Image 1: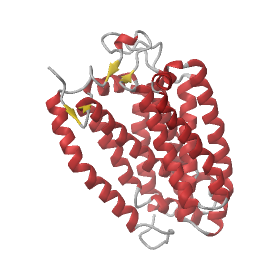
Image 2 (image 1 turned 180 degrees about the vertical axis):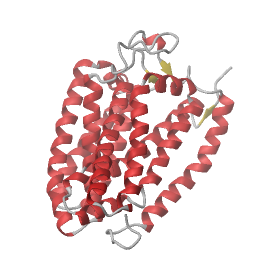
Image 3 (image 1 turned 135 degrees about the vertical axis):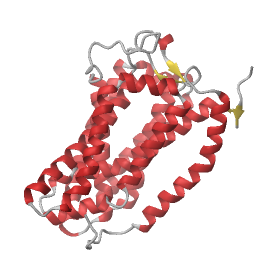
Length: 347
């Protein structure tokens, strides 16, 4: 029986794009508030920390909705991948869940009491959880790109529960952390002014250097030791446009920041994140989880997807729901545009 298609693509491939789009949206939106949190302890004054916290205050919880929807879409469209990935990556996912909880508590509890020790404690938890969340996202992403030791029953055959901490995933984790810190610093520059603005502007140089160094190291490692990730460029040379655009976008960031055009810089840091995910998707497709034990054990969009009827119904729901989510997101950001202004309801 021939697979059902929509605009030339089968339903499973469309759902691959839906899941990828949702996780890309999460990285773009939650990326800047995780990055902003990573800078939190570098702000010494209470007023600076409160201003930085209120810059993300109206949007941080809405940004995390994209992660929830993305996880639900992965479960609905590719249940085998969902089950296998959460089983294989059990340790980082449990750490991730705990950090999300503590980060949310820190944001909400920090200003509930006036004691200095109370606020410092939640400041440390907030900053540490933001840094570790960004790093763990990159580690999981790096493991998916590199491949996992999965047997024919899709069970993990790694040497230990910490075998996910391999060189390439660690490099990807540092790269994503550096990119989020750059993204977050640029966002804070759009929302702050005065001495805090000047401090963040000076700190941004270090974030850019950190990102360029980690990105270069992870790229060189992939080229030398993971040739599978570059095969698409030999099979479909047109895909070379994606890494070229990514490099141009990265190269444009220091230029825009030096000219203090932070609105455009934020657009290009967002574009860099999206291009990274497009590059990863082009390297993976049609594979979702690559088995390093035997490639035949790999989970693809076709051997791990839900039924075509389910995918067709869910695609219809996605076509209806996506414009609503995008409209709500635009409305929130438009409503809270401009510089941070403190009042009695501020964090």
